[in-house]
Image (tube, rainbow, N blue to C red; front, side):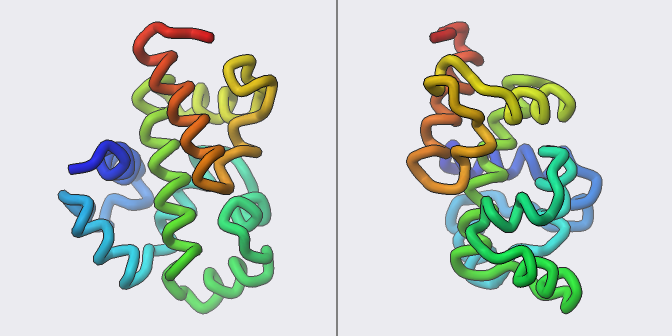
Length: 148
């Protein structure tokens, strides 16, 4: 399984709100899941872990807050780019949980400027692939004792 898929699995398995959600075992199974649609319980787990309102999650997913609220109202799965963006976000959260241990530590770290990110706030960077990669790399460096 890819490193991202492992971290996504870790995140999904650690959250009670996704307990009934069958966690895929391989990257190809995640691909099939993303193509089918990602359950809203996963979005709620990300919101709870990050301690952010749904409106903020909408910005990270690059959709309007009203679009995301409509998905929740209609109980419609996230699909396409929304599901892909959420997969990327929960991949970072899986790494953050492994490195920082508690959701409280994850929330705090993700919301504060980090010197290893040039003083940028991790939460502001995870709305695209390059920013997500930078945040993940910094977390991996911290995990291995390499603190910039």
